[in-house]
Length: 273
Image 1 (tube, rainbow, N blue to C red):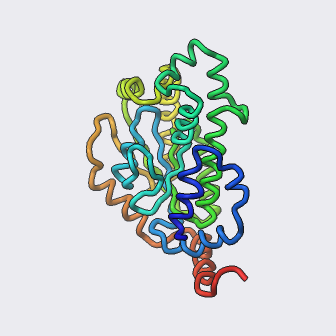
Image 2 (cartoon, rainbow, N blue to C red):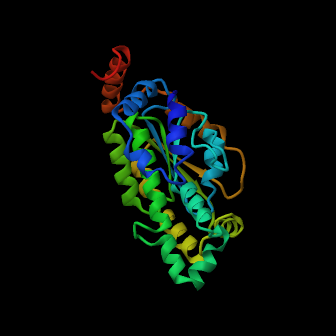
Image 3 (cartoon, rainbow, N blue to C red):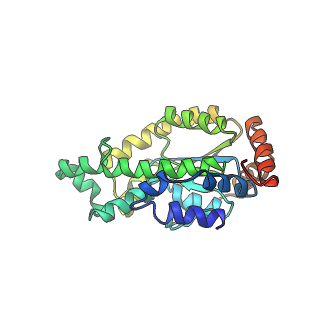
């Protein structure tokens, strides 16, 4: 079975439902296959962080830049990067439990008990379950150092900084695409999308993300680009070319280069002994 087929069968297709036992039973041989096949993947050891508040259009931007399906029916980009985004798992869990995603704002106002079951920090909440599923997906991708697109709002600077350090500790080169829009446009898009969040939550998240913009620029240095998405339009050529260069250029991270040497040796010599 090919690497892509393996991950699709084990993770992408089943991850919305009952995959806990599947993931817990992953054998060393599967991890080995991920490593030895993954060294030939485009975008290997490249990790791109997407940041932008609700309604900024990150999915639209990811689709345009990386070839990600806008409806997120596949997590594989045309660059070979794998998208890590808990929203798709969350929305599937909402549907499975009979919750209309468009009613989230009303549920937050009128049904506190259900809102807690959806969003609380308790391990049994739908949001926590979605995060758990996504974390296991990410762990499998990281085992083979496959290219990653980490999709989040960016409202928590500390979390992004920690995840960047973690990725670089595994050997990844890192990059950020900051998707920006006005608060008015963010609120309008939120009201019209499939999963409608409470207005105050959108405002707070947008404000937090804006306050982190300068911090992210300093954190990522030259590996940082801003996409103005106030009006949906094709990605500008300079931004597309900059992202293409990052993905295609040789791995800079010393740990990543060392990992590639070992992975190539494993592939040449038949894997782990």
